[in-house]
Image 1: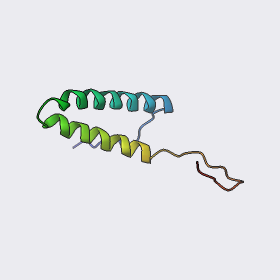
Image 2: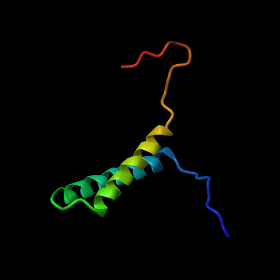
Image 3: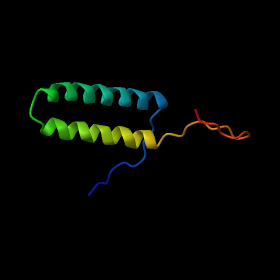
Amino acid sequence: MPGYNKTFDLSVEDLELIEDALRRSKRELSVKNHDEVPGRADETVRGIHDLLGRIHNQKVFYRPRNAPYIGG
């Protein structure tokens, strides 16, 4: 049985495009779902939100190496 590819070669621009598309889908589903009874769209919005969070948590943000970090 074949397995899944666990290695991806995506650029920063690719990830930015994916994040933008996910945010747009989430926003559209939220607007449509606002007037309807919560259901499958609500589960999809929750899944998109979780995926965006996992993508965010994998990012490495700049921190100066030679000076103390002062957050803002």
